Length: 169
Image (cartoon, rainbow, N blue to C red; front, top):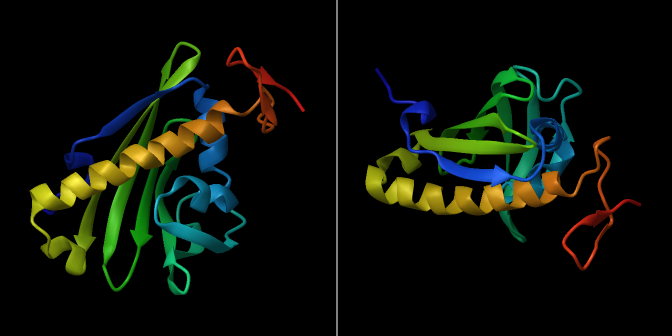
């Protein structure tokens, strides 16, 4: 049996926002390069994103060295789980699993990932997971920043007050 992302250690972050707020960021395919480390831009988003088999066409890398590829939804359970197949050839493909757990008014977000095809799979597991864990720590930091800056209706907030609260637009 081939291991999946679910078999890998999770990076976790408690987000001071509801699972609905976190999901609204995940469900906005155009925000993908804002929170996914390595994604540079989005070229198109399927109308059905984030439903199963929907995809985002994106580029990875840094200009002028950009590679065009896609990420496809393998499994989607709104406000609870999103499993993605992220392509980044010539490096290969990875399975990414994002789980959301309500923790009162907050949301515990867990992300697990592993390369499952292509040259990335040849990197020894400890080195591969160390790099993935570091990248996903930053990915969750970015996701949290986006989710925490939304008002109860899911609209982005413009300003933060000096006391650390938020001020609506």
